[in-house]
Structure formats: C-alpha cells, structure tokens
Length: 208
Image (tube, rainbow, N blue to C red; front, side, top):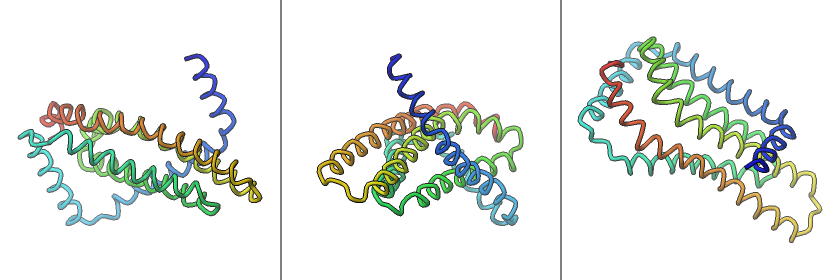
C-alpha cells in the first residue's frame, strides 16, 4: 500500500502541470454549462421541469431497474474512455482530449446549475448527496485516463522513429493502464445504480 501511495504521489508530481491544464479544461466546461442555464427560455425550463417531475414519479413508484442503470452508466463511461484511449493513440489527439474533458465538465455543470437555479438550497442538497459522490470516482478516473492518454500521445510524437516491438509493448501497457483505471468508473456506476436511487427515494419529499 505504501509503494502504491508513493507511485501515485510521484505520478501526480511528475504530471502536475498537465493535471492543472486538465482541471482547467474541466472547470471551463463546468462554468460554460452553468452559464448556459441563463440562456434557456421559460418554455425550455418548463420542459426540463416536466422531465424532472416524471423522473420523480418513477422514483416514487420504484420502477428503476438497477442493473439497467448500471449498464447505461458503464456504457456511457466506456464510450468516453474508448474515445480518450483512441485519441491518445494518435499524434493529433491531444487537443481533442482536452475537449472531451471540457464536454464532460459542461454536462455536469449544466445539470448542477439547473438544479440549483430551479430548486435553490434543495438543489444544492441534491447535488451534494445524489450527484457528487458517484461523480468523484468517475472524475478521478477521467483525469488519470486523460493524463495517461496525453502522455502516450506525446511519447508517439517524440519517438516517430520508434521500433515496432517497443511501440507495441508501450501500447499494450498503455491500454492496460487505461482500462484498469476504467474499473474505478465501474465502481461509480455501481454507486449510481444501487445506492443513488435509494438516496433519491429518501430525498424526494425534501427536494420536491
């Protein structure tokens, strides 16, 4: 365990600037998503409120099937991981990796911004209890995967005259690291599917 902590600490230290840039991309996405709420007209907000009301009807009747939620969560996160992995295996993928991180930030910022805009302090409670816990695991994995993808893309860029065997070995290691980190997203999916719905059920009278 101590060795693992040291490796993680060294990894973060060696890539501190890269993580700062990734975090900035994510925060820009968060801010953009939050500000977009102000551009919605009353009809659009009303339609979104109807969607939330229907969602709570499903919650109250406990019609949510955890395994289906889990499958969808894993699929969504796998798609993001696959795109990042693919971009990391190219020379020109680096800017698009930052874009993917920014888009994830935008979606999260929009969701949180809308909840707080419409429900005020209730939206904050909902965000802290039902949204952030599962997303913390996903975001840790997302940032690590993004940094790994960028590093591998830079490795390819710096070693254009590489040996095929060396490249293949590095690519296999790169792939194993990426999809090992993806397992943390799977844990987030378990939380979203089996824990979050029960939390929402307990909170439905508070939020509504």
